[in-house]
Image (cartoon, rainbow, N blue to C red; front, side, top):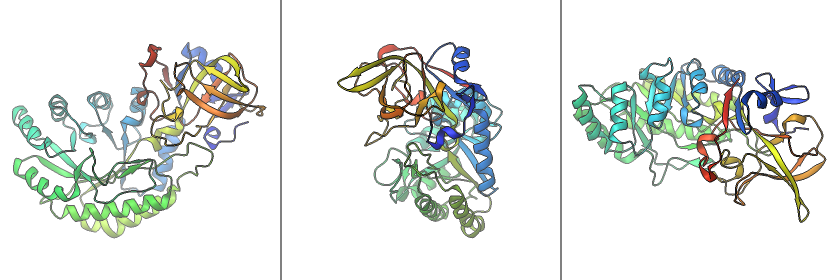
Amino acid sequence: MIRHSAAAAFGRHRGMLAVGGVDVARLAERVGTTPFFAYDRSLLDARIARLRSSLPPDVELSYAVKANPMPAVVQHLSHLVDSFDVASVGELRTALDTPLRPDRITFAGPGKTDPALTQAVAADVTVVLESENEVPRLAAIGDRLGLRPRVAVRVNPDFEVKGTGVRLGGGSQQFGVDAERVPALIRRITETGIELLGLHVFAGSQTLHSERLCEVQRRTVDLLLRLADDIPVPVRYLNLGGGFGIPYVDRDAPLDLDAVAANLSELLATRLRSRLPEARVALELGRYIVGECGVYVTRVVDRKVSRGTTLLVTDGGLHHQLAASGNFGQVIRRNFPLAVANRIDSAPTETVDVVGCLCTTLDVLGRGVRLPHTGPGDLIVLFQAGAYGLTASPTAFLSHPPPAEILL
């Protein structure tokens, strides 16, 4: 019997979990193997619709492709969001293959090489500057190509965000340019003739506390308005970051989206629109859009008892779902929601550990979980698997084959 709310969004068919209306047993036959990831496009649609209905209508949605760069997912979202943010040449190519115009793509991330910057300028996407050193390199690339590079400056804020899963601003950071150095950088950009569109601040991710997220947005807007005074041309782009979190364990409460949206509406009405009327205001969301729309399905291949602990050994593991094993930023490991997918509504009868097939004690997908009696052939499903799953995991470890991905 599933208790975690993550499972409630998915359907049921023949007593099994269903993704996109297809039960997992049939999906496994359709895919031809386990493990695999399955993403539900109707849930993607619903999540975007929920965001659109809550957020101010003039706030743009930018999808952070890093969260899930599967081409079919990116293609589907290209019809639903306003822009893409990419962080590599590979993601850039995926985004450029969609109907979204290149000027609706931003290319962020530290350590961009000259070939990567060249491709971005040639493609007419907006480069998000993460370092002062990118300016002369972009200027030289623009001169060589006979094109005018278009940029936004990512700001490392002068405040620190507490209560986020990952801190992306404050202190020393590889991300962005320290806020106190940005005015001088703006002058340097304008002297080169590079086209400066605006500013980007992303202070933290995986925030579930609406009051903290609202405070981050207020401080972000204060910082952006202060820095905008140094920009000698109309500001046309402001990225407020994102940081919207999703619940991964039973004790996590979902983010109060309505409270965050109300705060953002007030900031737009009382601060941003009067000061920067020409600016496109974007929220950059990744995990919040795709995270709850996907599952990871793996088959039990062995059941064994070791000194009183029942172990279910699967054909998947941390090489596909590093985050679920607790090795992707968790200080204290907590179980992601999981269930026996082919007996989704059966009551739990035993306590087991679910482990993967890798030769490391770190390969644990669930410890001390309550499940119905489970054995070889049963299908284990991990929820909240739509973001930072396959591409955020060490897929080459032990040279197992990669899992399939499917969008239904």
